Each structure stands twice: as C-alpha cells, then as structure tokens.
Image (cartoon, rainbow, N blue to C red; front, side, top):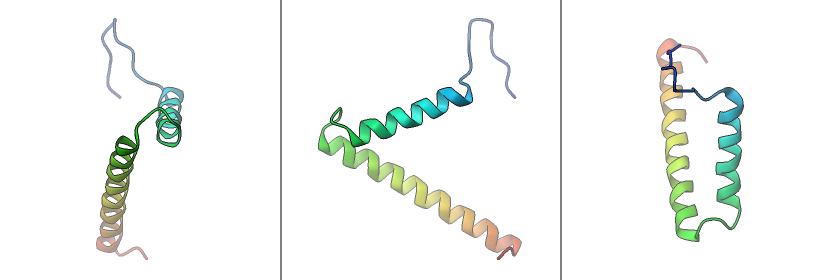
Length: 65
C-alpha cells in the first residue's frame, strides 16, 4: 500500500464505487451528448475486451480450463 503525504487523501472503496455509479449514470442519463456517450462506451468496451483477452491468454498459458 502506498503512503500519502499529510495533505493528501487516497480514495477508499466507497469512493471508487460511487465514481463508477456516477460514470454509469452519466452514460445512461442526459448529461452527455450522444457522440460523447458512444465514444466513452466504445473505449470502455475496447478496454473490457482487451482485459478479457489477456485474462483468457493467461489462463491458457497456465493450463487452467
């Protein structure tokens, strides 16, 4: 775990969860224009597919099925 300077605070688990919920609400709500929603959704989907592919390759190398 990293240490923080006295004037710095690190995000806790609840802060991260709230941020994820706010991000999802922004994608589903009317806060962003359509082009921004599509761009963000495409980036999230690409990252999810990339990480899923890496996870599958790691499982294949280890031999877990």
